[in-house]
Image (tube, rainbow, N blue to C red):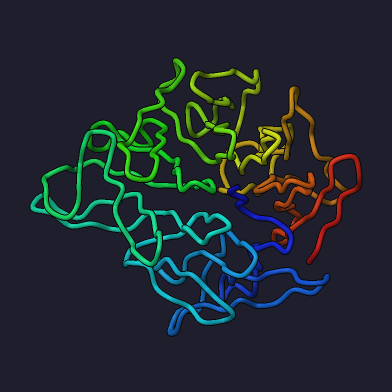
Length: 304
């Protein structure tokens, strides 16, 4: 199944401001710099499986990293997730007679292909001006993300697209917009409704309203259907997007549970979960953000 940020994890290492962010991974308790694609000096790693890392480098360029060897996946692109077979999803820029537009992609069996849009835009060629992006892929190469319905109406609607199939509009469950950020092999899809501060839904043929409001982001879902993310919490300070009220990490099984803030942390957010119930994310202090590991029923560890 798809696991967005798991142990060993890819995280964001906030280096000195001069150098920006660099992707790292945690192996046997030690941080290892994944580095970036030359000549870039910054990047982010978004996903990892047993041997492949996916992310973005520079301004940006999606990459896959196999044992330190990086391959670029398109231009003006980012890789947001992958599965155990190293199918990689994200977005890249596609040009047609109307201009250049962001499109969801699937990298499968060595081939990078646009997934088009809900409105029917196919690439290359065509005249579609809507955008799309993909965030997660399951073991059967089913992809989820979001797509505009009309130009400029981002993020639009959540979608699911099976390998060789058409892009299916999952709707918004009554919200102004929606985007899908995770999928597992039983077909559970984690959906964020009403970006930028909205609701958490689970979709599997139809919507289940989790009752969680004030959601800032959704990090992913594991094989048991547990969803993680961040929800607005009391307080002020620097959050993941540096705007609005601070957020607190949560996980949802059949009810919502908050991951505690430690002394000195003004906010935190969960960005991924594995099938062992290990949750990773970020913790914000008066200084930089730091990655954390939290085990359901266990304790919180912050690195930095």
